Image (cartoon, rainbow, N blue to C red; front, side, top):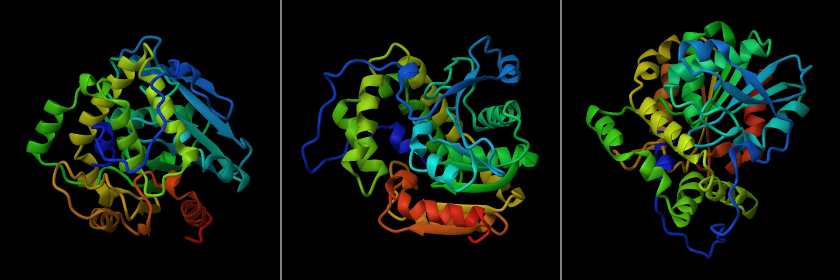
Amino acid sequence: MAGLLTALLLFVSLSDCVRSYSGADPLAFSELPYAWPVRHVELPVAAEKFKLGSRAKVAVVELNPLGAQTVVFLHGLGSNLKFWSYQLEAFAKAGYRVIAFDQLGYGRSDKPADFPYTMEAMSDVVDETLGALGIEKATLVGHSMGGEVAMVTALRYPQRVERLVLTSPAGFEAISKREKVWFRQVFSTTFVKSATEYAIWGSVRGANFARWRPELEWLIEERVRLAKSPEFDAYAYAQVRSVDGLAHNDFVRDNLAKIAAPTLVVFGEEDRLIPNPFLHGGSTRKVMEWGASQIPGAKLEGLKRCGHTVQMDCPDEYNPIVLGFLSGGG
C-alpha cells in the first residue's frame, strides 16, 4: 500500500556517508519554512461533525488566485504541502489557480486527536476547504495517500471534481484481513517516535527516490528536527490513524468504476512502496495498470528511473505530462 512503507521507516543500507542533523535545534511544526504565504482556514463543519473544538484549521497556500482553472494539490502520508515544491509555482506560471494545503494532522495544520483520519474524513476536509475558498470545482492532484483521498472525494463529492491526477496513488492495492491486522498490531506511535536518524535517511531517501539529489536533504533535516518538537506526538498519532484508515479502506477499490472525472495515473517505474514489500510484493506497474483499467477512460503514464515520490524525484518529466493532461493534450 502506498505510503505505508514510508510510515514503517524502512531501515535500508546507504552506500555513502550522509550528514547528521541529530544535533540541530528542534523545529516546531508552526515554524516549518514554507516558500509561500500561508493562511489558516477554519473548518466549522468538520469541527462540529468530529467534535474537534477549536482545533480544526488547515494551513493553505494559494498562488495565482485569478487563474481561470483551479488545481488543488493533496499530499501523502507523513508529508505536507511542501512535497509539491516543484509544482506549485510552475503550475501557477502556466495560468492555473493553485491551491495546496496540509491535511489535519500534518504540516502547519491543526492536529486534533479526535479526528478519525480516515480517507472519508479527509475527503470531508477537502470539500469544506474548497467551499471555504469559494471553489466550486477543481482538478485534484493527489500523491500516495492524497491520491486515495482524491478518489474518495471524486466518489463522495463528484460535483467538486473536474479532473483527477493520481500520483503513485494508494487505493489500488488489495490488503487482506490478515495484513490489516498485522498493520494494526505493528504500527504505533511508539514505533514512529523510535525511528533513528539513519532509519529516517533510509525511509525518505531509499524508499521514496530513485534520483536522490543533495537539494532534497531538507526532507531529512526537517523530519529529524520535528521529532524534537512537543507536537510530534500528535503528528505521530495522525500517521498511525492514517495508516489504519488506508489499510481498512476498501471503498475505493470497490467503486473505481464509478469515478466519472477524467483521470490520469502517473507513477514511477522504480516505486519501492507500491506494492508494499512487507506484505506481498509484486509489480508496481501491474498494480497501477489494474487500477487505471477500472476507472473509465483513465490514462496511465509510467516514468522510468523514478521512485514513489515521483513529483519530486522526476519533476522535469512529471510536470509536462500533467500540464498536458490538464490542457487537454494528454
